[in-house]
Image (cartoon, rainbow, N blue to C red; front, top):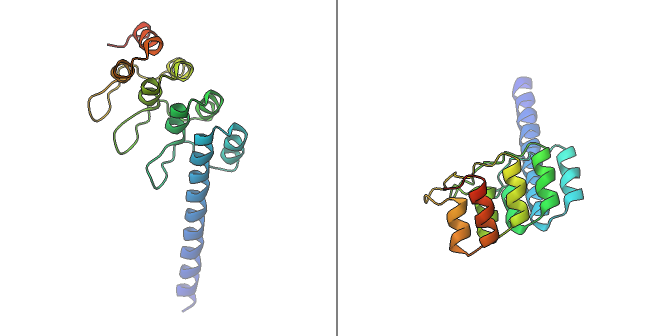
Length: 149
């Protein structure tokens, strides 16, 4: 009986910790979307996983890149965000999203951090294709100078 009680307590603590970890990771993604860099830094200091997916499959770096939050992108990269990480639904990367949105400054930051300029998503699209589709000429030139094909 005593062993069963200890096991139940242990499983309760593990479950509570998992829920808290999921909450802090979701909070990180939410504040990355809004560009609240100071809170991003606080959450990372408290143990948020810089590369976590939330329940909707969102990733902090991809969301911050798409929204054009350069300071937030730089902090996430400095704290270990994987520059070529793909989202689960489409295989998109931060570079693909930034290129598609015409976020020139973000594209430069990502390239400087080692983003694969020719990485394809699940549909076979590259950052250059995304930028071209939306007529983001400055991004197109930047990607080509970086070796995009």
